[in-house]
Length: 356
Image 1 (cartoon, rainbow, N blue to C red):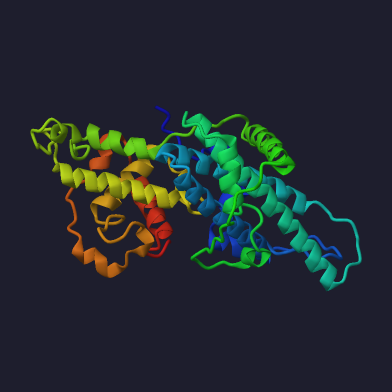
Image 2: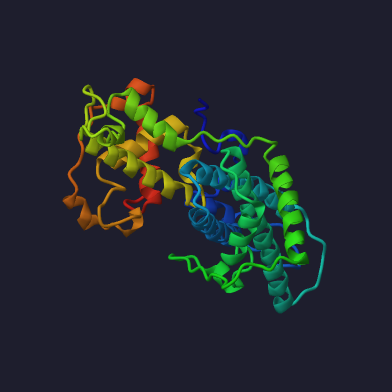
């Protein structure tokens, strides 16, 4: 089983470094190449780029629900998209650092040119997001028709949302659905050709590295290996015995282990929706252990909330924490420093506490 990070070192770029607010401030304070055309600061460029990625990962997540994809197919598609946006960001940064030709443009023309460039970036990344969904289904052998992916991408408006929403930096994100899927005419065949072409472009950009290790699967393996249990045994109920036990040697009850697993999966799902993909740079084994630890403490699990963001701090008192053995992650060769750093990152993504 491949235990490398979902976004390994070879797929990282300056986009990861710019996720730190201090780095952004330092970059924006550096002198830029003097040209007659004003160039956006690193901070404004990163914020707009992050907003576009944020819009698209949300649309990808909803599309996976509409197409009834499993967690692994959805996660693979999102991770492939996260990998691509890092490579693409690196290419754009190289382009921005090149000396620009001298042109005399007034402020209005400059703004129009900037808006047109962002529109092209948005349209391109929208096509990439659709292709990554389609590619994720292929990689996990949960195939969907290319027509279905094109339809849901058009209905959820992957690349044609209002340009003013690109400047929207606060959540929640509003998605306006189209009333009807695109007609089966020449435009569909053009979209199909673009989908296949974009898929090949994604694979070339990623150097055909489309294998993704899944923390969801690793969570169950860790729970089983350490004897924490793997949830309620449905087969016993089907046999009429009515026994809700997974193993007599499990440290947790079936209900407790199922709650931890489901909570960890919710945390991992939310981590894949982070536009920066901050948690996806950690090794899968570390990421899984951190998600299990947070889920056992009550984070990510609430009977009246399907998403972590809907839970407030007052709900924590209503959840009984599940006690796990001290420093249990060391049995998997995970250091405490790695564990704390990953948990801190996940908590920041879930907006539960400040990020150092």
